[in-house]
Length: 458
Image (cartoon, rainbow, N blue to C red):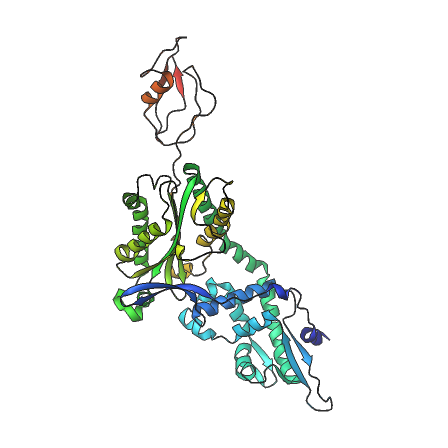
């Protein structure tokens, strides 16, 4: 029978590949009028519940095996009613854990969350649908929590009641799997990941441009945010951080990195500099930034000290002690990709560090965020890369003895005015006639300030 197959088929193929991890995040707390950062487990919060539901739904969509099935309990078959026991794997246990969560608490705080995180919306729609039980009709999640999962013997009970519960449970899982693999849902995922993929490519291209200028980089990583006290208007009142405050703070940070950072660092430290700033919104911690800064590694090597200086400027000068920061050099990473990074692949460990920078650090800074669109106006950006550094012109090919011929140059910043360059190339000053009587003179400079590519022969 179809029902028997639905309940009793045990196909936990691939179960070993699934594992759960505790929800960890970075928070900024106000302690004795100072904002203190802490990174660790934050189980039981709204953010953790939504995170677990999201990860569970992703795993369910990928899975192909039956999550729940029944096994007969070895008792005297003459006794009525018969008794069965619910069996499940790790993903099944994870799903029931999510089913027990207080979904109303999440929706009371964020009523439209299902429109922006459709994994959560898909879960909520599936578990809250009305189903028919023997004792009446009602929401599956409500009935399951009130009349089944709260009972001390919920894993093992009479076959009739448990069969009914598990059948509805497997139907809910199948609905999530069917809708999650639909073309509409996959289209939403593609749309969600498109912009982060472009941001990742932009940021990595910026780093490669920095490597073209300086073969030795100092890569800084830090996170910036606000004390939870100032993120909640009920606690801080008029002092609460608004979206407009966040925009102004971001502008001040970019201005500091572009104009003022070079004034407090050794000369040449900001040569070939680049940076990327990503704004995100957390359900528990509100607005926060992920920042990556690239400096000249031949000039500066105290990565943690410089990062701490930038963080201190954010805390005290930009946010006026409402903001907090986290220096990523305070942590040890399994796959390090920050600090000293060299272009030379032959140096021990450097090739792996470059690979980690590309595959771990850059994607994390540019990763997708479900909730920014929930709190920011349409058309506002959430990622700001700096302009790529300018590369000095380098003449290619063998040296020429004659003037008056076109010279190919790389796109470059102004290295000198035309007369000086011409004098250098022709061993004279101004327009110089060589031994065969050819004179070279400029046709005109372009707006870019580059040395002209074309020369006129007179």
